Length: 351
Image 1 (tube, rainbow, N blue to C red):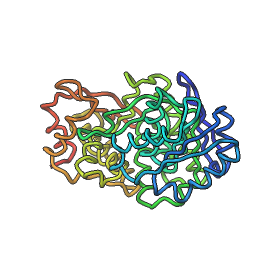
Image 2 (image 1 turned 90 degrees about the vertical axis):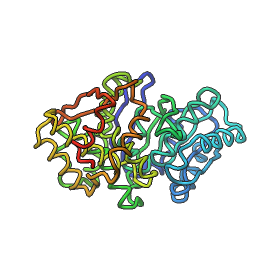
Image 3 (image 1 turned 120 degrees about the vertical axis):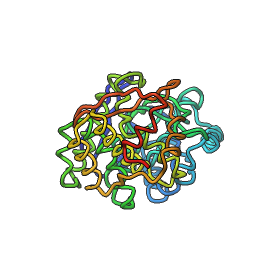
């Protein structure tokens, strides 16, 4: 097992390894005196893992209740979030209890935001069951739901007490879901040169645990320096501004990682055209994405993407901040006038 300590206002451990769900009751009991635990999950995750988690929590002395919602980004909205809050109320969850987020990015975001808002704040624990959630969304305290106007537009910073990443859960992931998670891994590899070279061949087993721990350590560096995302933490949005736009254009039929891969490829190409990075750097990024069978071409038009990018929460008036690579291991923020977005997209290979 690997452990990374996240150094924020209330620090916590991220534990990575096999069989952690089997020991989740004892592990969660070690960080809270709560008498009750409320599990929030989606139907795809709760079926294979919900009973195990409930039994382990009960075995550790918790009274356990749960709420399960339909799988997918379409559930990440205010209506379902409100249903979760009502279910917590009906279960008589108190501020001294603990919420357990079981699943990938959507359950983690939904549960975290519900925990942040319910009675003005309840402790919560993350049990990520996807690679994407393990390396990124379960760590750092960002929680949110989508609005009609865009992705993650309503949310709160709410750090977990503990993150338990059981890599055994990856065995039941569809190939497409596992591949999607590697897009976030590659994002971290562009931010840190040393990781880039570690991704060939595709890691598995203990090597994958090492890669996950490396990604979490990189994220910790940014989060501990900028917990509330007002400075350097913005660099973690590499590939996401264009990626979120592609995700929205698809009606969320694209997986998050697939959209991030498209956005990362586009921003690398545009950076090379504009002399921000070399053509070789852009080619290496695109080649690594393709090595992992991730999409690198965007099937939407410039006007479609522009419309969605203008809804991005990183927009400030008539400008939008894009994260661009200067080299493998070095990225920066580029402030782009809204009127220049079309040219950036075309430089990124969008027609």
